[in-house]
Amino acid sequence: MATMGQVIFRIMIVIIILLVAAIALIIGLSVAGNSSANDVTTVNAVGQISGNVLLSCTFAPDVKQSSDVLWEKVGDTGVVYKYENGKISLSDQNSKYKSRTSLFLNELSVGNATLMISGLTVADSGVYKCTITNSNGKGDNKLSLNVGAFSDLTLTNTSQTGLHCDSPSWYPKPTVSWVNITSATIITNSTITGYVDGLNGVVEVVSDFNGVEKNIQYRCVINNDLARAEGDAILTDFGLKTQTRLLILSSGQTTSPSRLLLCLLILIFHLGAENM
Image 1 (cartoon, rainbow, N blue to C red):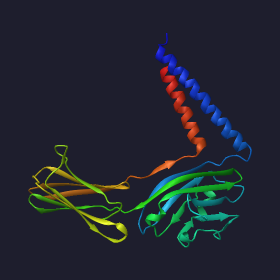
Image 2: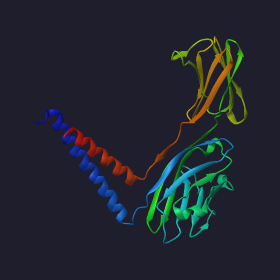
Image 3: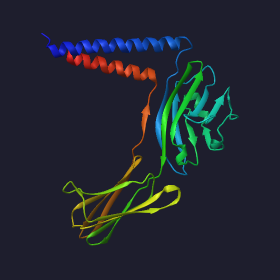
Image 4: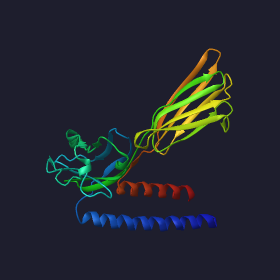
């Protein structure tokens, strides 16, 4: 016999399923009123100041006709990029994107509408929308672009008891920490960290740790909202051994509403089956 908790849970599952079904019906009716929806998938992106970035946008290929592609930035007037009726159409392009954007036009036939933006600035950060129109219907999806600066670090020993951690390019300003990996403890003293101002708000990070012991592994960690640089070092009788890595943090795929709805339904039925 089901417990009172199981009964309440089942009732909640039924209510949620009914709500999701109602939402699905509303979406279905709105799509049916126009044409079949075109599933569009985008991926959040991180770019380096002054560098290039690829804003990914993929869709189901259309073998019947050329696909129209529209890229916009939320909050901006004009378009970022437009490809319409088989040709590039930039008459209403926002001036700040002039000569900075391009599509891989030969990839449209396989469902790839990825946009490249060059000469990135912090002002390019924001939410972008990719809209695809073809015989499959019209679909769109959004992604977030974050622009900043981040770089790998170097570790050197300044003495038999001192380590120096240096990384040349960070924005926004990062935090720095030192860790004793061998004992799994954060080092809270014997460290000095400084920041050297550069162009466009970018800073160089320099940090020193005094108190190094031989055959103990230490780690310097530099991170902001976009990236994390780590460097490990161990001082032995044969010298200093190091390894470094740079991890990009702010990224992730975003899916079309119809796929999100399907995933939600699967999760609900899975939870319901476990608790029945």
